Length: 427
Image (tube, rainbow, N blue to C red; front, side, top):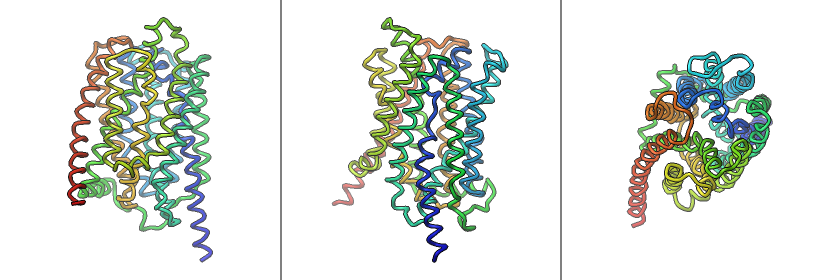
């Protein structure tokens, strides 16, 4: 009895520490300036190729990391992710001192590519595993019914942590564009410390996978016998792509707006930092209330609303370069905040513990692979070695807007069918 009480307390402590982990997890001080940082050394095609390389790195590491989590445990997998992230930020900070660059194939290009590959590993080893750890910890202390509300609170902390990091990162970038990466290194150390204090929640042998990677993938694919999980999988992959389009291009958009209005472009890092901070602060407010929205308009209603909002923002970026649109872009993280807790709540409890991290990683892989391919295709839409200037970027955003409309039509159809089904059940 005493052992059981202690185990419950340990699991509850791990679940509480997850809220602190969420605060550090998104504290990426480089977010307001990453595009400007890379564009300071490389032309547009090299910048997008580096970003595509990062997402490709996530692709090749994502599923093996999820399988490792299901086989060896959540905590050691997340510790590996934290270490990889710390090394990545250290290389991004020191890269310009270690190598020279200016084009694809230069020493600095390969150094940054290596750093981004390490960041991809850091993201992959945490992606899916952290959500699985949160659910497993609550399950271990009999509090799994709290998962949805706790995920909403964790989403708020993620966005608030990201908001503070963006504000500080934008300001220190006025001194040196490399400085945000040094602060991000510190945040990665914070992740390592918090995860080190956690305890592994899935300690029973029956909770661990004994299957090899191929069998584990087969078990994940078998989950699609539940039609809802397959539809949610497709939706998640599409939204990873759509959510990253404004994220990828908002920095040059702000720079173009400031230039068009005769403002000091040199202030772009600080303005971008403030812009990102407010963006994440709004998203934190939305994320904390996402489960309430789901309860009010239904799962597919909230998922469709998130997609429609992101599509509208991409379309506005494409059609107008203006301060009002720049202000509206403060909402660009709201779709992710709105969709993530309801999506995690719908998926996590429906997937068995033995395959949970692998399944979530496979879902993330599908979205990141899609976005990596999207970036490569977008580089083909403009001449090679084009500078990161608005006419080239506008073409790419326009193609993304058209694709987003197609996604909305598909998910709108799913929502309409779900509404008809609900009305049929009521009758």
